[in-house]
Length: 537
Image (tube, rainbow, N blue to C red):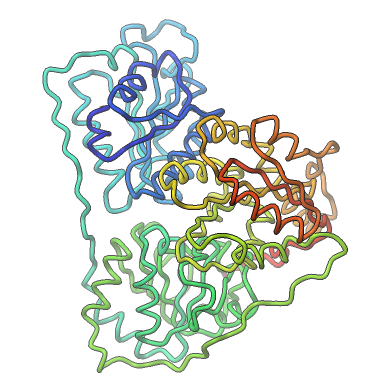
């Protein structure tokens, strides 16, 4: 396994070591794969996901048997929702000791990890014998790195890990070009026949790095582009055909455009409630062209006539663009250079919206910003101006609080030349913020921006609006993110004004150290989530 993972290009693995997983972790270190010990297995799983996202290769995360494995489950589901190839490896008591009560039991008598990981991954299996290993490992990595891409899980008992194998043939999978050609003529005809088409760029554009293909498609037909929350950054914020974000954190102009379009060209979006929450049922388009590697929800969300395009998004777009007869297509009349941005709120204290609107001007172009879930995340979706395509990473689908903390660390490990930011909230930070110590210990200089409004803001504002109550959304003793960061070895900056924030960002970038910038923002600021409704009838 160690040799095979090294040959796959894996340079680092992430996790928390323990007896049941010790043999394989140590052997991987012997083969030059550096082990990054985390403070919580869930964070280690997110780190492996961030590593996979940034490299395009396999990420590897370890957990011991029992609770070490169950702690990885959240990260596995997150990787599945985001099509990230991560190999989760968990330990298990020795096969010969099955049926004997043991500490951190992973057997069917208590917590069967192979079964538990099955719905959260694309493949999950216990390796019961050493001579089964090569078959199961080959199958797992071929699925993880295959067309759909995503997490897989192997549970390996302690005695199986130490078996000597007579022969073990590992086949390194090569990237397949998955193109769907059957509906080519229907797609071109539908675009030519439409009067008001729109391109919805989803997370799939960022995952498949199809940014140039998206822009070329939009410019070929002169079609406006909007982005889902997860698709933010698929196209630069100032491109003439970009009409802003839609859904939760969206802008009014983009939503209006969505509601008067007769053709949706959906690129890598499931069309979840976070994306189409403001699409009126009577405004479903006549036709839907949906590109998606995962057919689960294709054609099942809207009442539109659907043309489905499976396979890899970038490969498909490249094929379509190569084979389009430009002399026989319709150039649509589309408004360009649209000022979709809305007026910033005026508040007595620091406005998060204002901070997000200026952040991209303060940081180097070669950056990636990982954004956690909550009010801060949707403020970033609405106000942050993405200059470098693909540099904004946000998951509004599985929406796991705290995921960006680990993902930013894993991404920095994979791409040390980039400036890596994590935007998180006090609620997320209180869950997995101890992982900052992992970054400090291994000198992984990520800059963490912690938005501290001393409450679970998105839940509070939503509950207050819908129920008039705010139970469970306020912690009576608010955290001090700077003191916490400093106790973990990081540099801390406390900011209550925009000027203080600007100075802190510049200092953090220049220091090239792990830094935590605490933003004390106005607790009464209304997040761009309050308008969220859902009616798909």
